[in-house]
Amino acid sequence: MKLPLVIEIAKSLLLARFKQTLVAAIGVTFSIAMFITLLSFMTGLNNLLDGLILNRTAHVRLYHEIQPSRQQPIERLPEFKHMHHFVHSVKAAVARAEILNSAAIIRSLKQDPRVAGVSPKISAQAFFSSGNVDITGVVNGIDVEAEAALFTFGDYVVKGDYEELKNRANTIILGKPLAQKLLMQIGDVVQIINQQGERFQLKVAGFYQSGLQDFDKTQSFASLETVQKILGQPRGYITEIGVKTLDVAQAPALAVEYRQVYQTDAVDIQTANAQFETGTFVRTLIAYAVGITLLVVAGFGIYNILNMMIYEKMDSIAILKATGFSGSDVRLIFMVIALSIGVFGGLTGLLVGFLLSAFIDQVPFITEALPTIDTYPVNYNPMYYLVGITFSLITTYCAGLFPALKASRIDPVVIIRGK
Image (cartoon, rainbow, N blue to C red):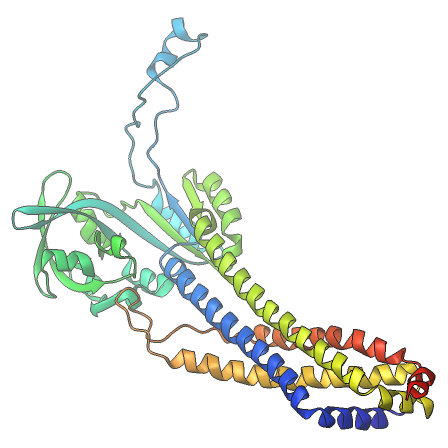
């Protein structure tokens, strides 16, 4: 049978039951629209939360962790050499926190073609003096240009100018909650006390806000030179090297390699944030599950409508088969009906989903916890639209297949005899 005739008959059946057809198409449209909107919003939220970690965390972090000595004094005595030793309350060994040969390591990392950039860092415990109260905190010595280029440091400086750290000596950027506790404003002078009790006065150049309240209550940032001076260390003193790779998936393997090559401790971002990645995966899985469930429900609606259409159009089906239409022709007619509903409802759903996503993307979302965000996050990944229309066609095809097979098996003699 010629396809144009089959399409014309399918069109007539669709228009004859226009309300039911419209209801089925609306069901598909709603399912696709909610699938696109939910997935775009959930993955946008995941990207936002991932950014809070990825923007501030090195893909591979090199550091020197102070650990207990592997060889205890008792093991050095000849008379106890061949005995089992039980040592309690083992204390950390006297060791330097700095990374030895840090300058050579940094040069080597910058020449690695897998590395996008390197940022040295110093973390120093200190006290922020406020009247008669000393507040415990951390002063992070950073390479300002590297931090801004690799980890978007400037996006989290909500007030002031982060470039003051490299342009002016003895300046500091305080975490915003920390500055509020100290009652500091930009231009004020804060007093830092190092672990040896020495006092240093630094000028406040700005406020930093990462979105993690507990983190911002203790953190501050200064140039490498300033922190080296606070600690009384030479210019080559570095306690941490942050490496940003071109491919974050290579970070675990690179951490193992760097640990062996540079004889220092190394941790990759996946290991350091394993629980966070699990949460991202679960949220995305839930979004897909809900969206696919909506499509399956819409498929049952199409199945019911086509079944009712078969019961109501048995006379028409019998006449078609009596006039020369084969079972495969009748099956094709009902498959065209189902796929027409799927295509129309799917394409309309993609458009509605995009419009809803665009609307959400414009809704203001202003919170002090996320200073870099102005509106709700939305991810316009074309893959979601491709998945949506694919599932729409698969669902409507499966929903129409069984009624179509049923219609193709109708015996016109039985139907006409019954009439």
